[in-house]
Length: 181
Image 1 (tube, rainbow, N blue to C red):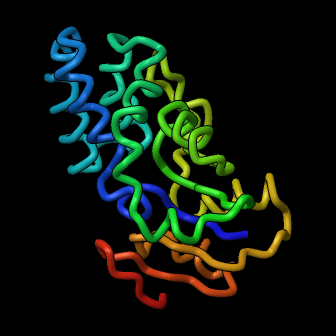
Image 2 (spheres, one colour; image 1 turned 60 degrees about the vertical axis):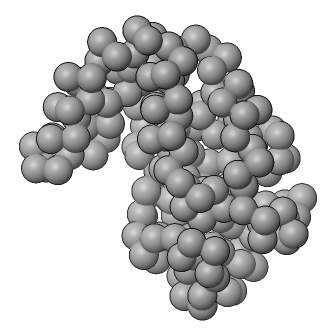
């Protein structure tokens, strides 16, 4: 099994941020939450609230986004998946990401990879569990896959070191460069 982070790893940017900007253009009612967005970033930057609570504030824009929006978004953006991933993808690939599960589910179906991501309610932006980040990725992997060996792991972030430590070979992705961890 190969395991990948998603944002800035096989996808060149943060998909949640890109989806947010896309929603602001496509669904003008989302603009009503710009003050909440600023507050969320302030809370995250100053650590006034946890990352999860700050993201819940940010996700208030989702109340103005139709259910089909993530699918439409990926129909328009799937071409940005990095070429090196297309060349090496396998049927047993797993993507494990801190991005919301509802956002990545359509691209997971399109590319036919398994997905573990942050459990966020699409209608409310409220988490139904922990943000899938750092050690939480390992916990979630073990919960679903037990001791299944990870052949290769790719991520853009050192915060994924706990998961990289489980892999036979781990790789750090910087833009289009793939380095040994």
